Length: 318
Ligand SMILES: [Zn+2]
Image 1 (spheres, protein in one colour):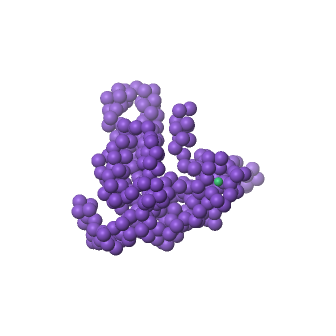
Image 2 (tube, rainbow, N blue to C red):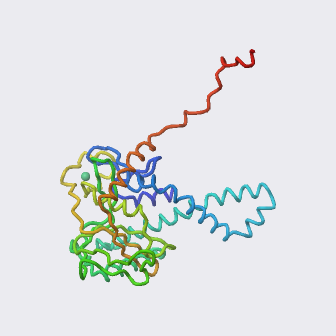
Image 3 (cartoon, rainbow, N blue to C red):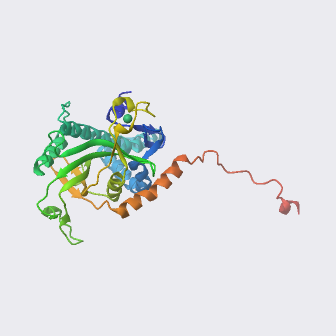
């Protein structure tokens, strides 16, 4: 199927689809390590319902005449409701697909490689170029971008992630002021620490969210990547399963980062938001791993209501 091929094409190295979401297959051992965003889903479940409700409501507004027509007939209404219920997933898959394409092109830019023009992705790619130029990033091979779309593993804790970019950034001073239009009202707008050096940056694309949007799972995701043990730079032969040809030369230690940030790419702008992916954030993430592991292996399909015992009819007998 077309979508399957596309999904596979944009999958990060060593990523595997399972019934329980994304895992990474360790090329050294064949062991399956849960993806950090998959583990983070254990935390985000509560936020999903309102987001799905919003997507459903928007789709309904766009299809109001059909809805009114369908409401006149019970069968039509059932069919319409079924279609409506599926729409949030359609929307989310579309967004995820656009996000993957933008990531793919950003990676090509980082590597100085050619890429196939993509009309829908282009505005986001333009915002990415603007970020590179505003922050003085030299994309010539190995200058400022040290890694892109890199699979990292923590074998001790049993998880894996894909890291978007590791980039050398030079700031004017140890802190930077907030972009005026994003200054918060509810909390003091302190300047944000921006040490110069190697930054861990994760890219997020959205058609609707503001360039300032960051969430608690972003902080934990950055902490998970920062605390991974090894990065993998494998040849294509290592892509699937335990690879015979895999050896230590395909692995390197994840470096220390002076800072971690989310780079929000939007159609006409971008926001570079440093986040505190510290020990506390990592503790929070770590707490989700046993939960994900437990839930993913839990099999409840055999558990059903049992019949009442037959020997406890004393009341009836009396
Ligand atoms: Zn390898």
